[in-house]
Amino acid sequence: MTERVVLKLGGSVITDKSGGCTIDHARLREIAEVLAAHREIALVLVHGAGSCGHPEARRYRVDEGLGRDNLPGVYHTHAAVSRLNAAVVEALREAGIEAIGIHPLCLALAEDGRLVSFETRQIAGMADHGIVPVLHGDVVMDTLRGSCIVSGDQVVARLAFALGSRRVGLATDVAGVLRGGSVIPRIDREILESLDVGGSAKTDVTGGMRGKIAELLILADAGIDSEIFHVSQIGRFLDGTDHGGTVITRKE
Ligand SMILES: Nc1ncnc2c1ncn2[C@@H]1O[C@H](COP(=O)(O)OP(=O)(O)OP(=O)(O)O)[C@@H](O)[C@H]1O
Ligand SMILES: C=C(C)CCOP(=O)(O)O
Image (cartoon, rainbow, N blue to C red):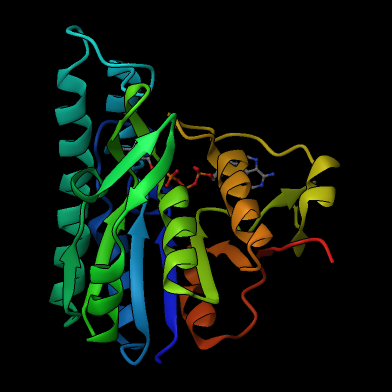
């Protein structure tokens, strides 16, 4: 079977997170060129929301329960991140990649913020046929809360586990997980306890770097390592060469 690689493009690298939904089309074109040069890989792509979804999720508090006052938040949050998804897919297709958008809201269900059902067999089928499915963090219906926000990081972990992927990468706007300005090469649960990892400097309802590591440690517990690196290093990650980032792993 072809190796399936799961790659997340952080919302911080494909949008300007300081304002309203501002998509960085030039960055998307650059990333698409790099991915097009690695077309032999069975790739499953996930992206975060950045400024296209986090502000709406916060404004409508769609994470905290659904009532008459915030009901439109499901639409507005999903619409914002779907706009970004369409831009990602368009950039990839313009670079000659057979990409297609897939929305978690339409195929997943959560319970208290955690995915409890998520059909992935169609995603595996696409990847194996050379189609690049492009998923994203999304608002998802939740059996306890009404709705919740499932981060792209949770989607990445879920997909990697379901697809049996051994190569999982997360491209972000920092060189890796930092301590005192330097990249920490490996993190396990024990090392994390000694670290002061923060959220995001911008509007982010899913916990920034702290939330990301929490999701990836669950994946590491299942025996699947993942890698966090700067967006400029995507090519090196796909080549399997050193990208200078952080590996999230299980304690030996
Ligand atoms: N110790 C740390 N090392 C690295 N980044 C950190 C650390 N503590 C906090 N951060 C913040 O985490 C941010 C990356 O997390 P963030 O959730 O914004 O990434 P993303 O996945 O690109 O975005 P999104 O969640 O929108 O997809 C960095 O830009 C930085 O501000
Ligand atoms: C806010 C929404 C819609 C999804 C959040 O996903 P993330 O940017 O990966 O944390």
